[in-house]
Image (cartoon, rainbow, N blue to C red; front, side, top):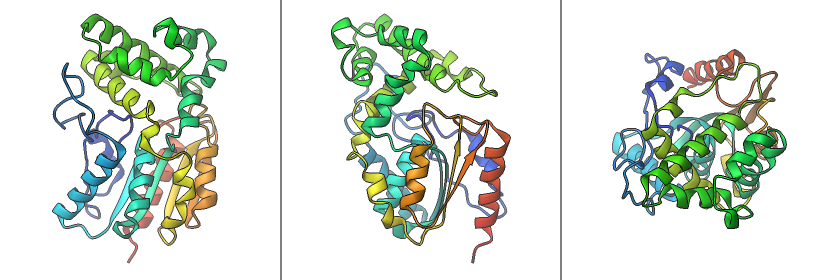
Length: 281
């Protein structure tokens, strides 16, 4: 389950799996990657793109492929989606491996769109000032979402660039950080920014704290949660709280690593978990 929302399921996800032992299913979530219509299209309608729709998509796909149970691998937004899907359909899950764990709660959205300004004050001020002055005190994700659907393409392009500049800033908290070259593509920028603001602006249509409250539904399902201690924009307490509420989850907090799988220790832990789960009876 890829991140974003809107990042797409690039072929690189396959590298985690041994093809001799896994059937790998890569899914581009609605309106991104190879899923059409593209969220970057001027008149795209995102009203049928919610967490509930994505959960239904995955369940329909599982049934269509004849898979009785599958392991979920997810990251960042994909961790939120993976947890939401697994809690609704625990009977369909064999194991779960998540890194850069998030819940996309209102508290987390406020943290990343406002409180991270304490870490990067100058960059955040530019990000805040990208929306009209009378909207700067409210829901910044929704304010950007409105700009990203403005009839004027120049307004949409500026909003996409401003949003993605902030995305590339708030994860810049660890030694191995490198700018994300995906943001150089104007089509990707608009697609990604529209989908992220659409989901963040509505806190992923999830009740506040529901993924932790309902974690007991995952009892009996082995899980591995991996999170960088220097992931400040996605604070490690989310992974820790999930591990406390999920009795069968193992938690790894990785020193000197941030958001994503760029660090070698995070990648090693992912591979070790998938190697171990591949030989389960």
